[in-house]
Image (tube, rainbow, N blue to C red):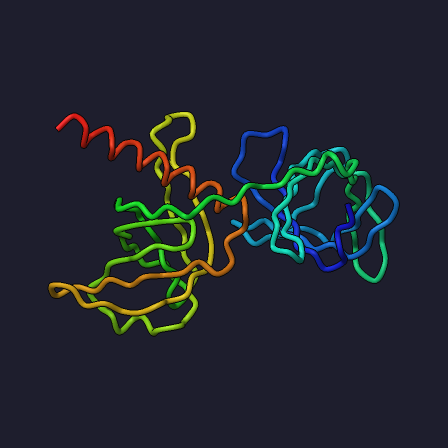
Length: 218
């Protein structure tokens, strides 16, 4: 499969139990190898220096908006106009389509940190889906329709081993709704990668099952 130049990749360590993810861009392609610029850690925003042999699960979205993932490893480095890292490309039948499910919106409180004026403001969302969420606040003047903001979402899974997972993304303010003296602000995610979307989808389905279980015991 051809991965076009300029394609954005998300790399997630394959051998380590970590939430680290790295963004990078394909800058060249050769037989069984793609060259990427130096990746940026999506949480710390720092450049990552990947060791040769390190294995990753890579994901990307093609021109038809179809998401794919594949296993890869660092094969070396190369100096050109920019420093580059070489990644292996598997056979075409080793690329996997990432299934996109219908976005399920769940009414459940979720802690959200909104980046405003270089500091985070803690708010609560009343619902969430893989397409967006709705936060609640007392001061609507802090937000403007159509503005894009940076947010961090805490997803507390029931599984203790999974614990709380964090998603950093950007979101657009859709509108501002006044309700009983407070404000509800629906947000639409604008740059959520496919791995984070799948994480949110899993969280929504888990919460949906928990809600149904509680309702059945009443």
